[in-house]
Image (tube, rainbow, N blue to C red; front, side, top):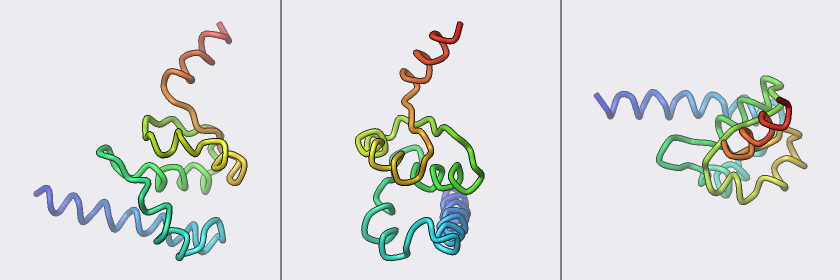
Length: 96
């Protein structure tokens, strides 16, 4: 059963990546050489980030250490903010 779920997820990830390439957000070579490695034990954070970009969502919440390490570069390039849960809580608290 786990193998079927993994296969399904990989197919869905590829659909998102293909759409991002079609929209010229990234290049296939860039995906293969860099962004494909942004995976962590909870899934593929960069693919979820691409979904935010494609769907014009302003903020991406993650605990992925690679995403958080490279957040300034990614935010500048793609214009979608990246926040850790701790950062998101701080922002919410400020607005109260």
